[in-house]
Image (cartoon, rainbow, N blue to C red):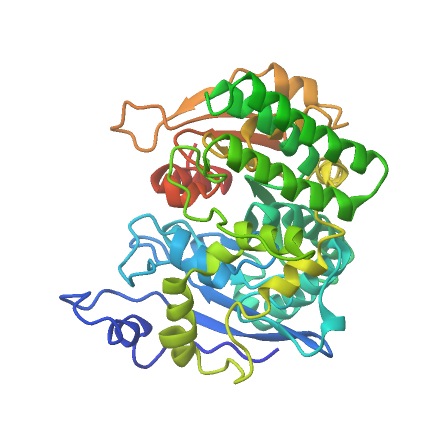
Length: 445
């Protein structure tokens, strides 16, 4: 492992601020950080960025460590998750009021290889399935905990979003096995699957009913979307997974046309990722990448990551451009994209690993009713006990009278229904997301 570099000299915050003058009137306190590369294979390296917890009353050793996994596949946690959702600074380099560093240390990893600052040296090194993604991440975690021994006994959780949830489930299961085999030393306590691509088919089948119930489709539109979803179902039943991915792209085209461009990530927000042109036979995968990954590499963030951040980190190889290999990451995972991971969640529950599912009310791409559908398919013996529980309302803060979420749990399984949030829950409802993190990590009940 290339050693992470802790910030003991010029603060990153001030260095970054120098590139955007006038953002700060006084010097804010900067959280301690470290970062580095892990060569996971001879032709592939993964980048990680650690922020130590920044809490006014507790030392980082008294708070958990949270691994954040972004979606895509091909979207960067070190970039998007960090500066757009949960890190200490937003993309304007202003302090984020709802940063998760208040609740724990946060480890971002650009995953799979080729994502963000992570890179491959030849095309044969890209991951093509969940198995390779998982084995690479286990190398990172083993090296991290061996290097950062202060975190070996601190409670460790994996939080995720979108396709990152599918990866998180598989990584959590293999991490649990590695800990039991004494291959990795860490205090792993659970995984949280946010708006997660656990069952793509259940998500797709929910699109028509969800849009119809929210008046984004009429009867004719519902029929068209349902017909497109059935084509995907038939391809999945024939195990034609790459075809299913292509049909998925076609279904989204129908939705965009029928709804006048509804935002797949928050149905109440104007869509800034709609496509205006199509090209060539490669269009299904290119369109999917542009619609679901490229928007997370938008110009402002890309300029930040390839400019001030890159200069500060100092270890990014000259040939690596942040996000430069993202499209290849996505396309190499096309065969795996539509496969479900419901059985992985079942295995986690059976292994007594704590599993949390959370979902935004306004998310279309991974709608809440789609999440509920795959949960009903779990073979977990205690599922009926979970289902029989009455959900409880949650409030973002003690003084608030507005319901911010609903919550239900039984044994080692929990579900959070986050109101007024889309696909990116921490970005849409930062206060409630932070409260949820504290609840999942047993700091707030």
